[in-house]
Amino acid sequence: MNSISYDIDSSHRDAASEAARLQVQATAGWTKEMRNLTGFGLRDGMAVLEVGCGPGYITEHLLKALPTSRITAIEIDAALAQQTADRLGSCDRLQIVHAALLDAELPDAGFDFAIARLVFQHLPDPVAAAVGILRMLKPGGKLVIVDSDDALWGLSDPEIPEMDAALQIYGHAQAAQGGNRRIGRALLRILEKAGFVNLDLEALLNHSDLLGLDALLPHLDPDRLLPLVAHGAMSGSTFAAFKASQMRFTEATAPLLMMLLLMACGEKPG
Image 1 (cartoon, rainbow, N blue to C red):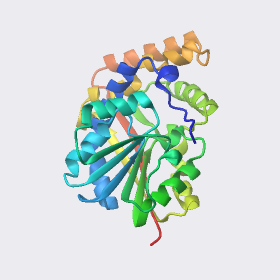
Image 2 (cartoon, rainbow, N blue to C red):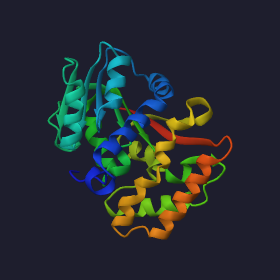
Image 3 (cartoon, rainbow, N blue to C red):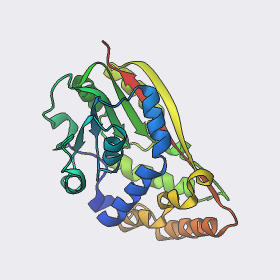
């Protein structure tokens, strides 16, 4: 599982723009997300494994929310792992591991809680990943997978008619790299196949009336689709139509945006 469908160099405009989007993504709904994680059993003092930490924005939230916990953050991308180290590496409660999940030399039964946020949609073998995490958890330890499903992405008012076509093209491109942008519906079955028990599922709904439109708009930025145009996966006319539709949305009177993530939890048998 050394190959994933997430690659800043080939599938995003540039590293700086993507890091800025990830920061907004990690911050906007964090209060609700932490509330759900607490409901699943996350507590201060636990040994926590974060799978796919990226530039470390969720890592930073975890360090603040769990002031006595030790956080181990795995990241396969060297540049992203370095960004996390540059910002947070001075914290003695944080271990940053630059490795693919199944190659990470971490102990069996070493963690109380694991979090994989928007990672599983990029993995060619998500069940193998879940099995790997199961090995690292203590008996009774829990894994929470936070991910999306393009069929349940959310809604806008006024509607963006071209959204479905854009998501379909985006999904095909990610599937060609071994990913799955509709993995949300499969999360419980992935956990079950990997051997987890006491499964649970929650929705994480972010609403622009609560967070402000600016907190969610980066996800609709048309320029995120430019690599698809450059690689021939999306036509210039389709891109132009989506961009025009998105502009009409932002210029409307009192536009509204809701976006949905799913949080699936499983427990290691004890």
